[in-house]
Structure formats: C-alpha cells, structure tokens
Image (cartoon, rainbow, N blue to C red; front, side):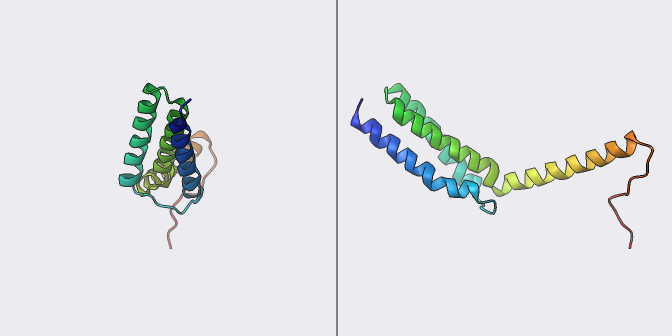
Length: 113
C-alpha cells in the first residue's frame, strides 16, 4: 500500500464530512452547475485511482462523487421544482382515481368564494 493512497482517501473522507451538512439541510440550494461537475470529477478520479491500483483512493473519490450526486438530486433548485411538480401531479392523480373509483362525492380541490 502506498502512503499516497491513504492521503487521497483521507482527503475524500473530509470532503464527505464537510458535504454532509449540505445534504441534511432541507433549505440548502446548490446549483447544478456546481454539483454536477463535482460529481463528474469524483467519479473520474475514482476510476483513475482504481486503474492505478489505489483502491482506497478510488473508494473515497467514488464516495465523494456519490455525495455530490445526492446533493444534485436533493438540494438543487431544479430538482426541488421537479419534486414539487411530481408531488402535485401525484396528488391530482390520486384525487382523480378516488373520484372515479367510488360513488361517493369527493370535495373538489377548487373552492369558489
């Protein structure tokens, strides 16, 4: 084992520790222009380290790339819009299904004032 392998793994581990609060914070907004390149770099570094026989570094870099993937998925403004739209669509679909499945009257989602 090379000492450099441990150094790179330690650095990747620190980046994961520093990124964890961003992933836990529901109000965090990280642009895709930041998270996607960082994710790509993590995976490319992981592959490169693996081909050099530096398995610990590869695992750390892939874990870092995975953390950035999760941040892109859950903490980008674009993904929040997609999740909101998907949730609204699912709610409308559920309401429509309930209305057509039963004979009972279901209150409509719109109220006239």
